[in-house]
Length: 243
Image 1 (cartoon, rainbow, N blue to C red):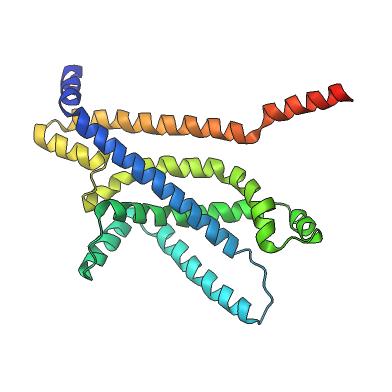
Image 2: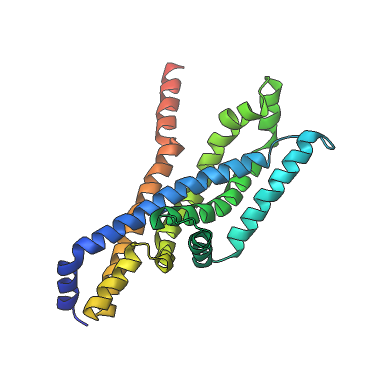
């Protein structure tokens, strides 16, 4: 194993590596967005107020039970098994799903199960006094969620969402079992052609590292922007000058 061999493999196969990294990023980004939306939906559903022994209460209990089963299944089983069940299971019933779409569905549903817990924790962390204050000025549950609670939840769960995105970038490698041409599957094809497994996968390691490093730094910047600390300090100084 030498640097010359690694550079030679990279020179010959860089378009394939680039395409594999592109597919990996697409799957990670889209599935994280889908998972975040699923998590928000489940989190809001769990907080809808209802009276006991009413039709609304029964319906909500059934829906929440189904959502709880979904969360437990996808949190309690490996994603590689989920990919096999979703893709080949549907194919057995005559439903031939595109591999790329199947990958986004599997990773999105898996992400949604984890994001549901993040959102639930974010909602629970909000002081109950804010719900009471919103109700006191005539806001309904939906208005309270949209205008008061969820904006704070977004900020609270942003670090966890960023971690989930980074995990999806790495965990997308398991999708090679359904022949999705992401980075890991591409590297297997390259190494199978040149019989240089170590060198081929060293390149892949660096590509994964670059993608996760950039993703983490971008998310840090977004977090700082959402904090608004600098803008708050400037506004405070202006108010002090006016007074």
